[in-house]
Image 1: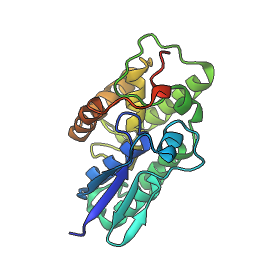
Image 2: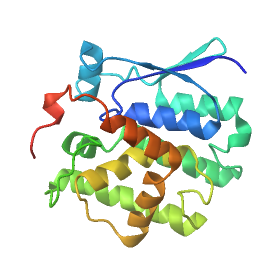
Image 3: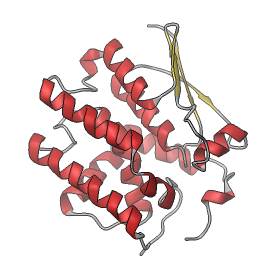
Amino acid sequence: MARATLTINSKNYGAWSLRGWLLCRMSGLEVEEHGVANDDPDTRAELLLLSPSFLVPKLVHDGVTVWDTMAIGEYLNEVRPDAGLLPDDRVARAHCRSVCGEIHSGFVNLRSALPMNLKARHREFKVWAGAQADVDRILEVWGQCFDAYGGPLLFGARPTMADAMYAPVCTRFRTYDVEVDAAADAYCDTILTMPAMVEWIAAAQQEPDELEELDVEF
């Protein structure tokens, strides 16, 4: 097995790092984690949504360097096709890529108004209208997946790239006490109790608080 490394930033705040890490776990690729300090200027800019591009997660494997989360998912699907990161069926595979692409490039209001913060819990949080539109669209995407593929995950019983991409959304919904329907609530439970997610959240709880800008009282 080729040696692989994954560079990530904060486990408490790093939504994109979580996605890349989950993709590696889902694919079965063993990686050595390289953490970037939260006081690094590029890391702070990225976590505070002030960076024009995302430099982490970055996967280095078998002489290949991949630093975009979607590209990491596509790469892992090529080198570990049996992991099922993308569905076998052509139509479902196109659907999966579409919902992944939507969160990869969209939902900016949700990301800025409800930043990922695994240590926090804001009960009765007021979601402003712009972010609520993103919440509504995400619930619509999830509902369409549940109807088409039967759950409990977005594309059936097996985790896919889509579940890795939407896992940070599940944490946000719980952190900010976002009201969701029963099917979405059950999906969040399924994601948050996955062994890999339990491991990540436990590590996040032990992480020092170094970004006061993301720890303000809403």
